[in-house]
Length: 339
Ligand code: KG4
Ligand code: ZN
Image (tube, rainbow, N blue to C red; front, side, top):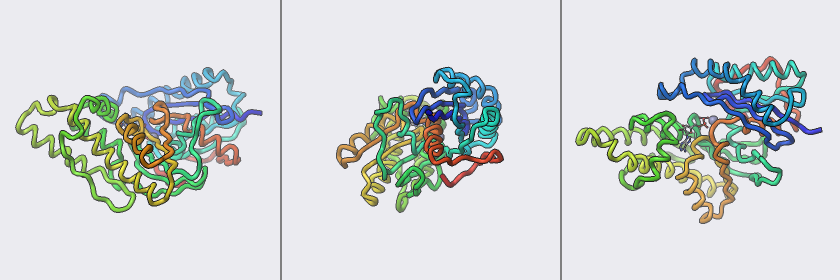
């Protein structure tokens, strides 16, 4: 009999539910939350309230698109953490209630492991997926890390950010420019018409494979402050060049560490994950490097870069095969280190 996983992701501001059959994705439904744009960031209390409103209809859509009924599901996988506690709680409670009602097991998934395995989401049986061992660079709004993945459940974090995440560098700088939230996609669009060498920004000097982005943000802030003094309309006049220069600096930081990790480990299977891996500048730079350094590069499909339940479902499926089920008294975790 087929293994059918219903998965739930509710760690931040998007409510998502997906259905997989024997590891192949059947549906991936999503409800975003525009409400946060007004505040320039995610408001936790509003996020959990919208999850409560969205969760039942989103699961309903996921099941309908998969053409399945609740009784067809073998197990429910859900994000245990890390994330906003109130948001996680909605997904965890729903998953438990669904599983109890259907008398099926539950599976906990670390959100970050979801991003690491987002290149394993197959929509067709012959979709290409990475081979072990591979290096995964997860670049999201909350995390930036390079992980050595020896096997499904044998991973080692080689480097991580010591301050802001790459997505935060986009979001906070976009906010300084008075652009909307989230800033990453806005910068990405603007950068297409800008000169990446128009402005010089200071790059951090961090040892080893760790990252830092807070200095870059400060350097960007000083640049804006000095130029606005001379011309109050500076940001508006130069926004494409500013976006392109900022994006180039962030990409330079990410790419330098990823190449170093590949050199040091000798691993050329490289996978990306997380919201920032949707960035078109980063994707095209990595494709060029892949040719030069002979990497086997795996970029997630754009729809699987930002938070989604499909990535939680694929990890849930691997855990199902190991019969790695959770107890019903498990509680969500705002912080979660182990995969
Ligand atoms: O993975 P994700 O949906 O959520 C977290 O787990 O954090 O990532 C969201 C982040 C935001 O910071 C957003 O600005 C960034 O991903 N992002 C992008 C792009 N699309 C989303 N950053 C740069 N370029 C993009 N095209
Ligand atoms: Zn995420």
